[in-house]
Image (cartoon, rainbow, N blue to C red; front, side, top):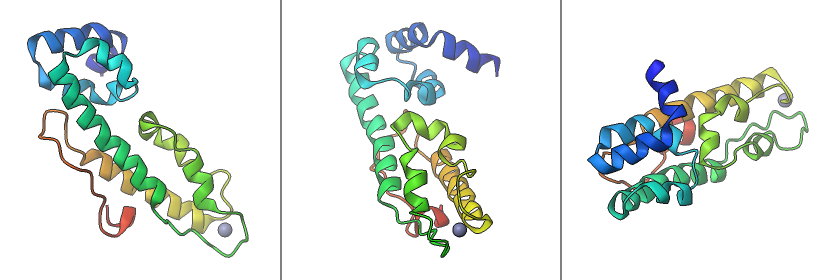
Length: 153
Ligand SMILES: [Zn+2]
């Protein structure tokens, strides 16, 4: 916990240090924080080779977002409430919103308990998917979602 709060306060200095000394593990530790930064901010701190790897890593998260956007969740509960799925996905922003899932998947505005339970299950599935994402130090891979969508995550 202490380490995390130090990281968030000194992310720029630590990134410079990690880049200078080739500390992939340090970038792994900071990856979720760094994903909140724009690529042009990251480019300032990382030398070309590391930055290129960061872009590949970042793209994996962009692909995860894209996968979420095209997923047809299907929460039609027969209540004629205009598109529960769209209401949830509208709250999904950039890569940084994947770290604020309680906000994205807030269920207050949803029409019924059935739909709320479905949306909570998506969030659990997505959390499992995020935990299984490769680390920065792993070889880059193309993101492929689970075969049955978040239900199979
Ligand atoms: Zn409903």
